[in-house]
Length: 159
Image (cartoon, rainbow, N blue to C red; front, side, top):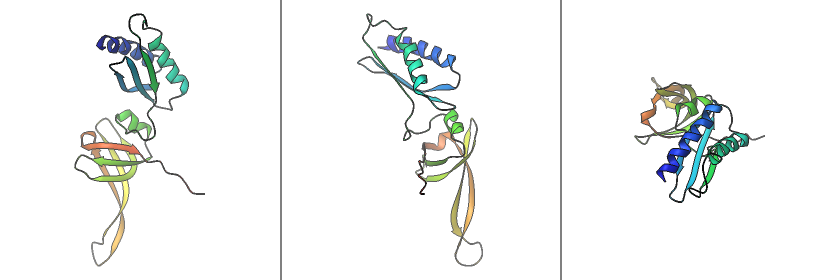
């Protein structure tokens, strides 16, 4: 199995080099020789992108050597963001982020770099003077290692 993983990795990398907007999220080979690949893109992953990557892997491997299957997909809407490149792609969108300390934040993604993301949201807080609450804007930088899971929130607009 590891030989199949090594060989498929070589051809997968070649396919990704041919289309620089694509990048790898996950690559695994199961015990029954299913090669599963999840790719993403700086733009949108098309069916043609998935077919091209699948063919690049499939046409280079020998079925007489080992019977295998290849599945190439893009991450679904419910899949978490895992790479800085995915966060950059979703700049300006609303995220639901759960931190490793258990805190949950729903906020707009307003900044991304290789070390952290910047989130912005509104919160109701006690007034500094007097009774009652007022709305404040909060901006917070979160290092990737503090994030347990981050997902893009799907928002349906009512018309």
